[in-house]
Length: 212
Image (cartoon, rainbow, N blue to C red):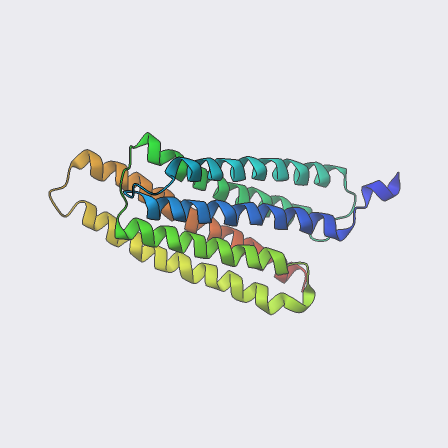
């Protein structure tokens, strides 16, 4: 009975890694979706479905992690850190799903250079975050984890600049106001992805400090 309360360290890391894998898959699907807007050959509906599938898989993994936390007497890193990181990864997945839903909700038929750049930055940030989570269990790779987290921060800073430029351009010409408002909401979601990635990266950096 007591052994069931003490899962192997690997169980927690495996679930966190699986969660971050779903995150990366969803971000890459969103990138392909944004790049494909306006193209007759793009399978937008299939990509939206792919994002939904990854988000639902993430929900399942989050539930498994939460259940494991409740059952476990000992955890490899602090319970609070595991829970916080899980919630932050789920926030990113939820926002990626919101982006996919926004295409239909706002009837977005084409993308802009800024939305494509923000989508690429979002996929890059999720990739670095995924690499950081994959390396988190290996104490010999602490510097790698730290570097990945710093890269996420740099990507978020770049995204801020792209976002500000995009919004300024939206309202600087004579474009349809309603179309501009809809696209601004889309940009906000893209910026949220980057902000949530940075939050998760900071949590991982905190884990490194706690377990130095």
